[in-house]
Image (cartoon, rainbow, N blue to C red; front, side, top):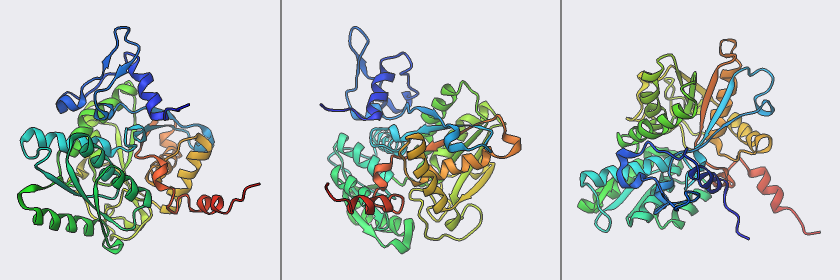
Length: 363
């Protein structure tokens, strides 16, 4: 018997109700509501790309929040997207908008992009669906699962030295794009306005509608800066009192004025302030250690059944700490769960479990 994933079951159930509405008009055919049967019980997408977005919210329980957190904490499960991360949104947006401008077309353009993993996976999915050749550059320190997923979608992968961080991957992508001449096209996720645009037009409205406009604090890690910037651009005008808290690794606290450095929270802390990041919209910057992020991610799996990555643990750890502040008692906090946990199995996050299961013997 074939079992559907949790993400698929959610999308099928949501599609069967009138709740399956979108904020996707600006992205044209790629964000069209799937068709339905005459009975209206089943909705069928014409493309995997139509299933990006409309991700669920879940309320965390006292099992993980503890007794000192007096706030309500919600998680937006971006891990429920088709390629299991929030970056599916920007992958579709950047490619679709570039097509609309006439900058790229399948069969003619070779897409090139640096990635820490999740954007690359999203781009590989979209490129496969639309028929693009894709070359990705990625620091060698990113997980094996990321490498395998990128290749499984058909993308070409070039690794760059870990010591050079995302800056090294960006530099290599620029070289490759230049070598390709007119055929090459860099999407430039860190500086592409179509990145925050899709969050302003989809993620932000989804949050506002799901919360019925009742939200006090938004918490998100900063990778490209697109998610928190785009959501703030939509939500702040609706509720100017809403606070936006940006997260970065203790070990690479660039937003706080520190120096870049190696860290374990894959997906955030690129070592520079991204061009997409509008710091004027941010009320506070918090620093979370890699160890705290990983410990919280493990707790989310064992205490809540939420299987997620390191940056998700970072977001929830921050939400718990913010919820402990006396002034936030009774307030509603929302944090972003950027990605699913399977692509972190070979990392330090689950290394003890890997060693344990590898040592198991048949009885």
